[in-house]
Length: 76
Image (tube, rainbow, N blue to C red; front, top):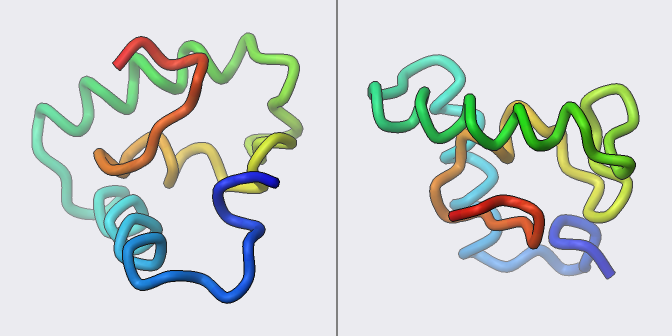
C-alpha cells in the first residue's frame, strides 16, 4: 500500500503532507532545488498520472516539496 493511502493517517504522515503543501507557498532555495530535481524524475515516471502518483496516491508537486517524503525513484 502507498504512503498516503493507509488509514488512519499517522501524525508523522500528516506533518509530512502539511510540510509539502506549505512549501508550495513558503519555501527556501534548498526546497525549490530538491523539488525541481524530484519533479524532473516524476515527469518521466510511469506512475505519474496527471501529477498524481499511482503508487502512493500523493499529489506530486506537494510530495516533492516535503523533505520528509521519499520515493524509491528519487536519488535522495
